[in-house]
Image 1: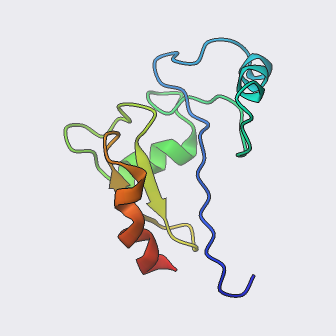
Image 2: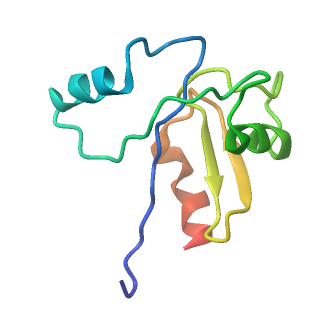
Length: 105
């Protein structure tokens, strides 16, 4: 890969039943929009049955009002070693985290 910079953005969480339908239904819907990013199965991100990844992210990187993930555009920056570095609010534009990304490259 040389000096190539790679960032992976994952969308595979479920908040308040926002994405109804089966995983296959969602995949079929996304295909209509020529989605090219990886898609994963639906999982819960909040509550007692939250997936361990999201549970740990909330524990390590606290939220501004409460630790729960408030909306599906919440963003977490994780370094190449898997350590959570920073949490970004749902309304923060992805472009605005570029400087934080560059620190890790």
